[in-house]
Image (cartoon, rainbow, N blue to C red; front, side, top):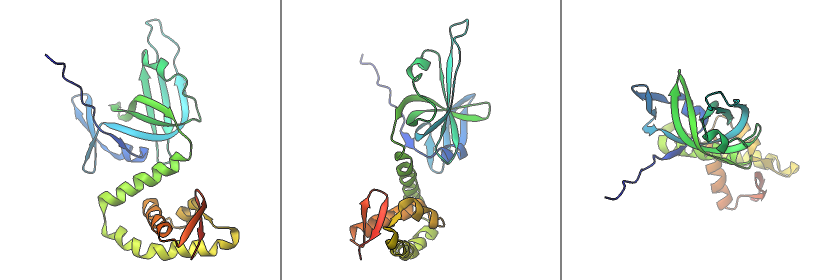
Length: 212
């Protein structure tokens, strides 16, 4: 008889802040999933900076644990590893930017991640992940307010880009800060359209200039 294969749940790409506002749904003392809109999430793909690391000394019973704190600017979440798995992630260090894939757990009123994979990433991916998740929200919500925003945002982007020409262009981060009434996902979406139309160009990644 063939062994039945274990099917893993989808690891949703989420911001930590979104994970923390999800509603825990329990099966007894065990977390089944967190409810996040129309999603039932029990595995996540999160990206951030390791801001704390605590590794226990090996106890008399031979057990040990590793606690890490991950921060992506929207919130912080604990990564908890127990037993021999602690060795797998012992080289992760404070200040490192990492992507984490793992299963959600809930204990003592705290949602945390039991990591399956922790992999170092370039810090620039923090902004890319933020834009990516904001874009996903824009697509899934499709609110009337966001659709109305798109009508106005193009002129505001162009106005900021044009006014920055004497300084050699404008940084994407500044555009997002100056237009904070709009979601970063919509800003990025409209910038991509303007790039495709040849109205603006990128002399280097993250820098926008007016082409006309």
